[in-house]
Length: 67
Image (tube, rainbow, N blue to C red; front, side, top):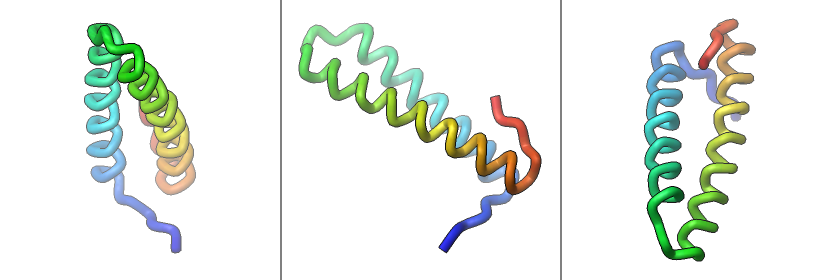
């Protein structure tokens, strides 16, 4: 079952992901633990994938451009 979010939900989700991405980038840059850095880098890749999916859904649902 597909869920169609409203515009404000897309904006909140986008801002939350941006904040989480910044957190992950900070952890990646400051950690000395190589294992943790690998996990964080994997999460950063997943976040990028999520950004693309959310952009596509927002565009399809509301012709909304998220940046």
